[in-house]
Image (cartoon, rainbow, N blue to C red; front, side, top):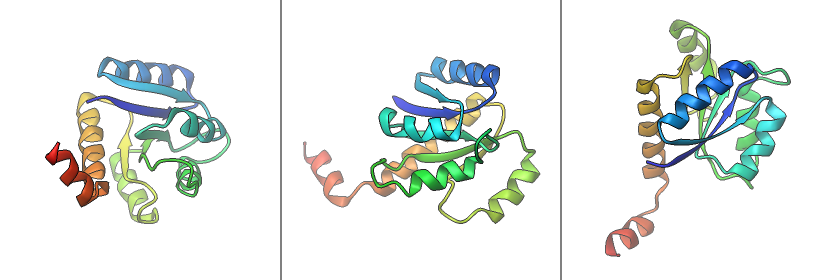
Length: 141
C-alpha cells in the first residue's frame, strides 16, 4: 500500500533514522523539524498520515494536530503522536487528550509492528470516511 507520511521530528538523527526505516517499508516520507514546518508541509505534501513528536522546539505535537484540524484547506490525515514516553505514560496522556484530536499514540522507536498498526488504522479511517455512493461506484466499475 502506497502512503504519504509527514514525519515531524526535531531530533535530526532520529528523524533521519525513522524516515529511512519508513521508506524501506515503501512509505513516501517528508520530514518537518518544527511545528511551523509541519503546518507548511501538510498543505504542500498532502500526507495521509502525520507522525508527530510530542515535544517540538516551537510547540507541542498536540498544538500541531489542533492547528491542522482547524484548517479546512488540508485533507484530514491520520494524526499520530510519536513519543518517547513509556506506555503507561501514553495511556495517561490518552485519557486526557480531547477525543478526536489524536487518532493514535505510538511510543518510539518505530518498528515493523507499529508500521502495520499505522496501515491498519489508516485503512480503518479511510473505510469510515468513504461514502456509500463512492463504495457503490467503485464496485460497479
